[in-house]
Image (cartoon, rainbow, N blue to C red):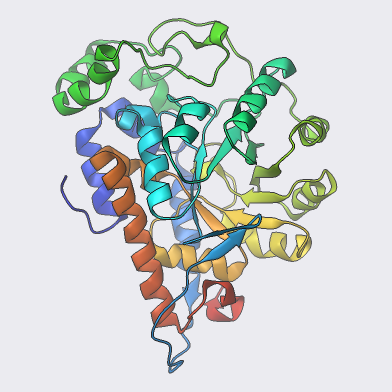
Length: 380
């Protein structure tokens, strides 16, 4: 595995190693990708006003979330197709998270089943849910997650329809995958990936599929399947029903308004993720850091506020925490690391972000992550 020193270098290595369709699925946004650029600009616009001569020699990154203490304020975000960037990629990511003392959130559309991921790691596994139209099916999935030891559920609420990602259509990256001369040639040009990922699944007697789907809808990614529809008209009534069913902690992911955050409090959610889905949904959506302060002030101590979208450096994490998030979710960065070297690459990426965060804390005069505040920032 080649070393990388930062997010951009890991991204470049991942781009070389992955077929175009898979890389672009991870890397790109939606429509004209204004949102991708805006996430970056919004984070860069916030500047830090360092405090000097504090005299500290060590920094503490530990954070407590839902009664559990973690070594860093980082959560590995739920991402589809992690099992296609590396053989059994979700398991590799979960092991990397455990090695770094942080939680891993498994996705509904994972290649490995939630019970396999939770069983392969001695760390804490969270689970992300897309609510399907058939309530019986998502109830069964939640029971499977709970029996696997999952106690924190992250419900994605910003995906009422599929986003307009035109590059996926061009790349044949739909369900099922469509093979043409372009993507066949692309796979041939990436023999290390072809032999290291799909070939290993086939040799093991397995064809990649969404293993958390009900068996009747699972089949494989290369064949037509019965359609599994998302809950049409997803609304707060559905979230209340989910709250009644789920016995553990409930987090709503995809909140960008203070009034929605307060409604999340009212329906009994334990936390929210202030997120624009990494600019992969509504291209015109605001960046999380632009609305985070209003949301944190609105909910106060009533729930735990997390944030994600566009994080590339430890200083990005510092800014979001200083505004008021308790921790952040990392998606693309962890997938790039996994694409480079499986568990070791993912762990290296986590380590890069933790080291950058430590440096940013030291140069900002902050000894304890829990003591970050907005007085450290110059905001537009």
